[in-house]
Image (spheres, rainbow, N blue to C red):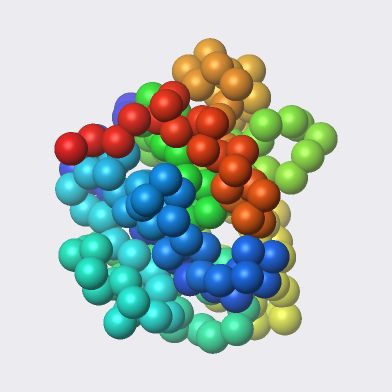
Length: 207
């Protein structure tokens, strides 16, 4: 059974050190819009329960969404997932990283179709490569497994996956919905933003 869009929270992970970009990636402009705003304008017509995970609430308050800061400091993106799951009151939370500025609503809905059977639904563009843990769906009980993993000193974002039931969504499934998989483009450097500008026409903004 599919998870309904009204029964899931959507956490946008923003902020971070962004050493390769040279500035806060969530606030970087892509064709005049901060990456965080570009994401929200692609999903706000579909999801009502959107919030931002950031340690700079003063800089993100202008976007008008609820905000939560990291509960456990200095543990990287995994701390952002942990904090999102703690804040969200829904059984499932969709995680979206601010440095992936394009969204395929079809792909997100596809992730929700199988979410109820698993603790996590995670895209994987190549079965031999790293999964995409920052564009994935997590069940609320993952929070405890993340906490246990962090207590061991672990910091790898997928390090707690061994303790949970994960459904990987493979590249073939993604490509059928999002040809070229541009929604998984990652903007880490100023040069990436130049490439990203060429993709904006394929991922239109909602008014």
